[in-house]
Image 1 (cartoon, rainbow, N blue to C red):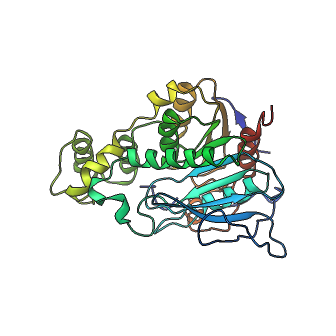
Image 2: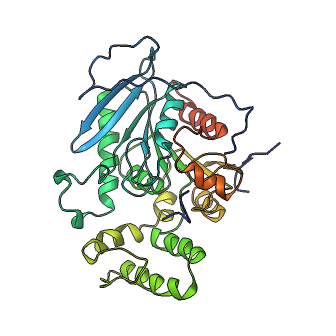
Image 3: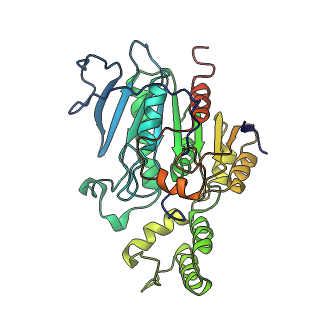
Length: 336
């Protein structure tokens, strides 16, 4: 039997053998509304109330469990790329956020998940794409936390960040009060350094060297024109990319006093155990959970081929122990 250890103890390719004895709660049917928090007409077996909302230019989906007065709510923040509210991107469809939302709602926790800037196309309301800066992601998360607080409908607000979304969650928690912070397979390094570490494992040295040099130059605020083969970042977009490459999660995490849960996976090929340990060290009061069979998109996998397959299997269940740990952490002490 696999033991789960509590405490400190651009994917290599598209990143289950699921343990058959794990019980999973059935999915909640989904009811979409055009706009706002309108009354939902329940279907025969539908219990959760799901509404499409807009906060400024941000499109989001709010899902509320039935019959619970002022439940806790979790803002779910997606990882890198043009990722939508389900946790899917143009080339990968693991539906990570959708599945996490379903399982949290089944445990009486409301969720709010949203389309990142660029998902489904760039909106004019976001300004010019070349003017984007990483702080804009944190601005969006802060606006959504404020929306949840001001609604008065929830007993507490948790922020749950997956991968790059963990960095966004940390930056948002610096600026607006949240009751719980959850970091799922989140890197402890600057993203430029993480990208170099990932590419070094994949590329031949002669191909990797000019890319690494270009990444370093972009991180230093320089424009690389033309970028080397294998690094398709147009010069006009490089300042925005640089703003994400240089954000360091460690210093802001050290300053937070928010109750925090840090979760890492032993079969994650994007974020390694070193990151899990570094985050745990930066937040020594945090609860930590290491799941040896879990990959980057929160599925249990058996090998590299299984890991690759999981990135396009939207029906594949999330790690069951992850779900229970996140739900228990968000609910811990509720009502006291």
